[in-house]
Length: 288
Ligand SMILES: C[S@@+](CC[C@H](N)C(=O)[O-])C[C@H]1O[C@@H](n2cnc3c(N)ncnc32)[C@H](O)[C@@H]1O
Image 1 (cartoon, protein in one colour):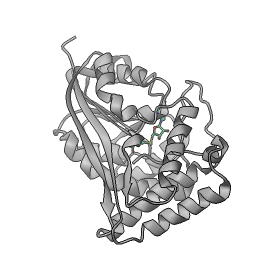
Image 2 (image 1 turned 180 degrees about the vertical axis):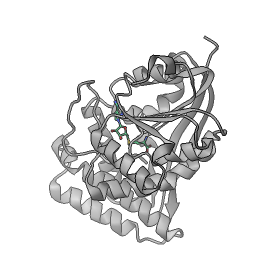
Image 3 (image 1 turned 30 degrees about the horizontal axis):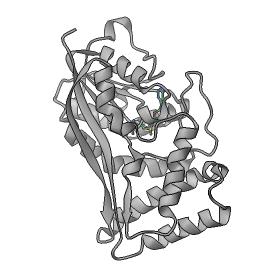
Image 4 (image 1 turned 60 degrees about the horizontal axis):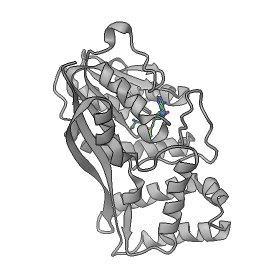
């Protein structure tokens, strides 16, 4: 599940909007979610020892380091990240884990990858997760990724389609808040359901789509620790976007807060469950 928006997204030079919070509590929440989802993602990627990897929008770098561990030390793994804060934290986490040498973290933009001339067309795998939903021109990013891999190299895209999230039983007002959350993406020109478009983006970028699946995110009350983390993650996302939602004018402050409180109570129900899937696709660069 994608992390949360900040209240006042700021336009950036490349005209994309990154919607995450970067407070320590927020980063801690994102790091926990990351650990949960990385195992699934790595299994799906099935990287082979010696494969060079480019990770676009590498964030805090946990997944990038996970990929690096799979391909083995001494193999080229590059993480590209636009935010200085994220980059600094990624390097700090890597140092803390004694893994500084595993990944070459570079500052740069997904729409204009900072690769050396001799690096273009050489990577075995180019991967991105939860980035296309934050940029104005997702096809531009996928085009860059296709150019970065060698002929026959793999391009892997993971992202959100927020409209598929479901909870049961009904939690009062929850669907209304969630729909408002989705509208906040539209408001800044980002695509809240880009996950549905991944195969199409690969095709448009001239790659050959090979595989389409979902990585399951969800739990039920019978999995107390996991379920609590899932519920609190959703609460964190919605609190992070409280102000933009209130600005949409569909909610009074008091009813927003009541819905969040109801959702937390819902999280205590013995019959509660939630379902979500992270869209995951893989394509190949053709022989050109
Ligand atoms: C939700 S995080 C995901 C991080 C990482 N891919 C993961 O799955 O753990 C999205 C990351 O993409 C970065 N990002 C957003 N727009 C970007 C751009 N145009 N170029 C490079 N990085 C970007 C953000 O700064 C953030 O660190």
